[in-house]
Length: 443
Ligand code: 4AD
Ligand code: MG
Image 1 (spheres, rainbow, N blue to C red):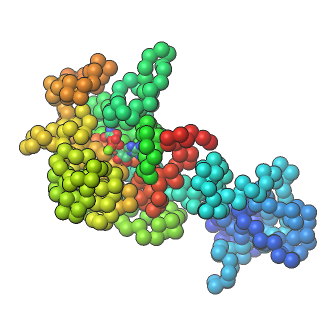
Image 2 (image 1 turned 90 degrees about the vertical axis):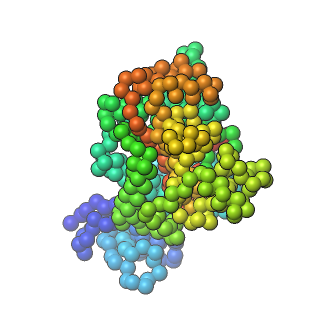
């Protein structure tokens, strides 16, 4: 009996089955009569033993890490308590390496894969190789499952997925972070958010969402800002602000439940972030004005080193300290009109504030920004005027307020920030394949 298997070996249950695996040499230990190979592929790792004559062949003696290899043999359980980190090992009876499979690039580049102390710039330049490391692989696998979980949760809520354009001529979150480019002679932008387009989909498709890239020309280097990030955005029709808050809480809880319910993902998260705590329901709801008081009571100053006043932006550092002290997930609501985007609905009971929400989580701060949308034509036109935005390019957005307007709202969640929270990453740069931020656009 011969079976093909992945390096995880989990499909092989029968003793005595001869298997064939392809993989790359992740780590290697050469002893006098035996060579231990930690074989890795995209599905897992397996320990392989070359013994006897096999361990004396030219290919075995010159084997290096990251070389691709095909190995045949039988799988054995490793007795509990044995030193091996993997619970099964393949006792090879044959192996093969094609000349082109050898890691001709040399060991130097590979060493950085496993040297966490290496210079960060070098590590980033070698991202295509460091991605093969244990931590980076695990983070990317968790990321894959999180995207799957969002798709699945949204589908269970009867929401439809759409793909709005990335090349646009309108801003959403302020001119300061727009990437401009020449589009056949016209000025255009890389989208900051698909929200305005999602709003136009409500009449035809019902509640909608998208998972697309958003772009921000962030002219500062922080742990949680990227120039290109994956934005999970949703828009819901005929809802109230409370419905929106309940929905956000439900989606986050269900996604976390689902990812922790998947054994492989859960084991990665446990290793990456042993202290991750599932947020307790209901999430703490706090109004912006109460947060300002809270910050002052706790002696946390604003960016100018003064006590916080109503109307101040709560800066990244203050927000992070607040969530770390509260140590729980917070729905921060009712931000003042002046510090929020033009499209946000005002609170009927207090027109100084908007029906807006940020979700804050420990270790990261804001992971979600959302709001109810201004649904009245005249109010929207006044908002453009107040913000000094030319309404002309927004004619299609404004039209939504002329043809069957509705109470609606939505939110955007930064996937990299969400992942940084779940996996306990120091920075969102570790949460993407190839991070893009100020002065980095390579590899
Ligand atoms: O708060 P933001 O700017 O809100 C919007 O874009 C809304 N139009 C979304 C909507 O209602 N559909 O961005 C939403 C989220 C933030 O909470 C954050 O998680 C993430 O997007 N985000 C970034 N992530 C990484 N790098 C950046 N530069 C980010 N800017 C925002
Ligand atoms: Mg925001």
